[in-house]
Length: 238
Image (cartoon, rainbow, N blue to C red; front, side, top):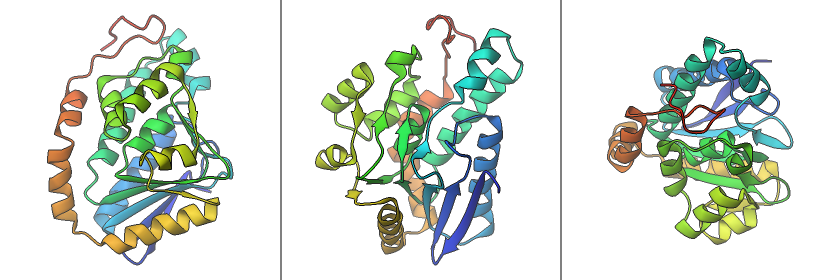
């Protein structure tokens, strides 16, 4: 089974992440970016919905089982990984069509940031949390990551999310309009997300141009990244 696959449902491309917990590593990033390119270049879809095959997890963030030892041994792929991860967040943020995250399970750490890169979110209410545990993992946010969270959540919830690592339920996120709807099950989450995406039917060109303006400040942060060393939290490695 491919790590990422997609199908068309009328004007909506439905992308499924099949890599178990969908940990973010170079292989997964390569497959996801290729799928996004194929959808844009080989179809006439004007909306994207992303779901996960795993019954519990949408995306569990960076593949720390690989990354932490790789940093310790100064693996030459580390810089390529971070550059590719940045590219992925940029690609989703500025993707030239409406994007909808169908959170069919947990979205943690980098997975939660990925969810915030989408234009809209739907989330299942019966299982799964949105959580930024970086404060407990001693991994600082890059400015563009914080900016993605800020465009998604009200400030008092950002403080709670980033400084406490709280696990947010779909019901609480719906209450504060962070997600569009808390759905009773994974299947209903996908169904609602696709129906919403179909109902919009907006042109790619205008959506892409609007995102360039709406997200210009995020793009500026992405253009000027100073990356802290994960071992110290304050030594630039780039």
